[in-house]
Image 1: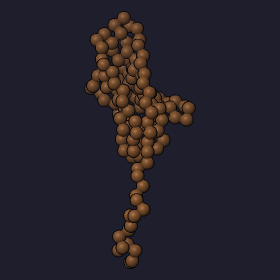
Image 2: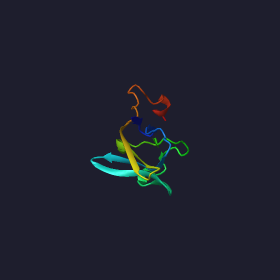
Image 3: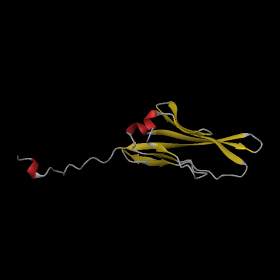
Length: 126
């Protein structure tokens, strides 16, 4: 997934809800420079944003079962990295099932202004 600096991007994570399976926890983590950190966790107690630099910039759909995609807004260059979505379900016999998917996010700089761009002449002469 590619995003533009200061823009927004959606990191996809979807599944087909199955009868007899209840989503227990949902978490998003990011790996960058070989260290991994958890950004977001949803559990019985609600939604938790665990990395302060993502506060106010990330969200996950609430009322749409099967959609755990991560929306990142106001992208910053250091947001580039490998994002892992992990969902744990509890089945009717109380066993746990875990699935995860990793997506690479690249943030690119906005295009620099072209060199032919010039200041209005009124700004050159007081």
